[in-house]
Image (tube, rainbow, N blue to C red; front, side):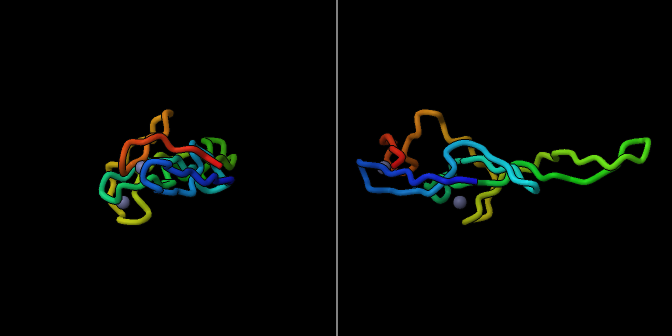
Length: 96
Ligand SMILES: [Zn+2]
Ligand SMILES: [Zn+2]
């Protein structure tokens, strides 16, 4: 998973995040806004759960989980809008 460094020219806030969503073989991550931390974070939104079909064939499925802030561990995160607003000053954040 590749993260990008986003920078707010207004207040100098920086965040190294995906800027969207991505997955590996275990979890799905999405860039979300935490209002508690005034930060953008990559939070786990789903986990791959192994299981079986009724015929006993192994199958993995995505199980959605409530996104939790990795910093303060609170839920209630909101997706980071496409306009990439800064969570501190609402300025526009640019990736480098
Ligand atoms: Zn800012
Ligand atoms: Zn937080």
